[in-house]
Image (tube, rainbow, N blue to C red; front, top):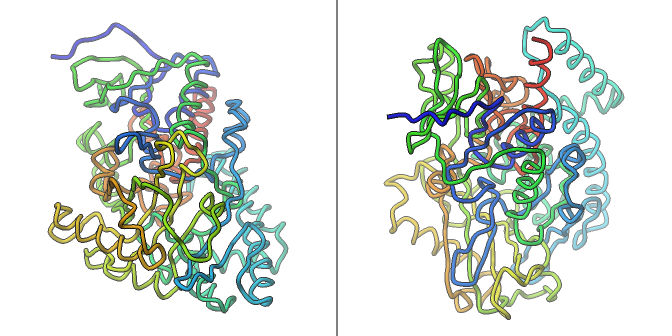
Amino acid sequence: MTKSMGEKYDAIVVGAGHNGLVCSALLAKAGKRVLVLEANQQVGGAAITREFADGYLVSACAHLLYQLQPEVRKELKLATRLATEDMTTIALGEDGKHVRLKTDSVEGVSDEDAKQYRDFRKRMARFAKLLRKVFNKTPPRLGNQDFQDFLTYAQLGLDVRMLGKAEMEAFLRLIFMNIHDEVTERFEHPMLKGAISLDAVLGTHLGPRSPNTMMTYLYRLAGDQGRAGVPAGGMGSVSNELAQAARGAGVTIRTGMPVKRIIIENGRATGVETESGERFDSYKVISNADPKTTLMKLIGAKHAETGFARRVSHIRARGNAAKLHLALDGLPAIEGLSRKDFAERLVIAPDEHYVERAFNPAKYGESSPNPVIEITFPSFRDETLAPTGKHVMSAVVQYAPYGLKGGWNEEAKAAFMKAIIDTLAKYMPDIEQRITASELLTPADIENEFHITGGHWHHGELSLDQFLFVRPVNGAAQYQLPIDGVYLCGAGAHPGGGISGAAGRNAARAILRREKAA
């Protein structure tokens, strides 16, 4: 039996992921009475810090901060300690000859490759800056006659034209290309090509030869030109800062309150009901959950037009990245690295062909026997994350398909763990002896812990038919579902995933603008 709490809110946000917190804070700053309900016991969604072994803490899913939008930082007055850094990406070589990539320079390659890399990054920076402008706006609705949409189209066209004729043609050509063709045309060093390829496919169900991986590469750069940092206290500190900003604006946040359903009466939202049977009333319900969860579970497909429900059900959102946490009794030995290099971002992606071969098994529901890996040692920068003298290794590992043949049982997880450790051991011969505890989160585990359909970071693949003007699907590309009073503000909405806050900010602005125009 549903028990009404007798409380009426101007807006209810389902989920205290970072986008939900940003959206709620901005609505509250505009004078709205806002309630946020979070299923887990702590805020942050996939951006949390938690213990995985006695005394060892880790950023449980997202582990690097590189996309938090300047507009979000400014409007919520976030702490400067959350600023991103320019971490060096070190592409590891088995022989100890590593390649070091920064924002606009690279070491360990030929002079010609170094020049090509500078030119490449300079061009990518211009294109990423253009994309970032689009990320921070409500996308115009295709075929709509709305004046605001017309202005957005016009501004986008002007921005593209301002690149100049040659660069405009290059931009329009590149966004449809795959990253493999670009790196093989430009560079000679295999590890340089491998590292760039990894950046283009990380967190996706794509390989370097897949269409539009140039766009996914640009997507990564659209935060702060790809500069990455490890916040003190892990990614949970980012979410805690956002929660503090929300509460400071007057938002009520309640954790351990999973929402059972969004209540639809006479074709519009009137509130939510929690798993415990409590009801909270509002004519605006904003979901930080992924689109499939929002429509199929929280609302129910019966409340939507059949074609729209079908489009949502067909959203491709099958995760392919696993997260590995290792508790270590000390730093592993890596030939060619100094101690200070453990503060940087390390990647295992020997060449672009290796990355593509790693992807191939995932096409057939199999995990990669030779995975590509992004590695950080967060405890090297922040000693509070591990016992004195000990360390934490946090790694993103691809490819680990959500729909693994036979499922992610213990045997399958053990086999994939062995493949990961065997791969790491080629660069860190003593890694297995250093491990005192471990945790491997497959996409199925990510789905269960963070309530993300398919365990996909972006709540839906970043592909041209699920991007910009049609994200997540046609009919819901401006944050409002075709059900009165229901909105999306999470990674499944424009522009996508990553700890950017753009979707939450855009959703809040769209809601306030629509309210003002009503």
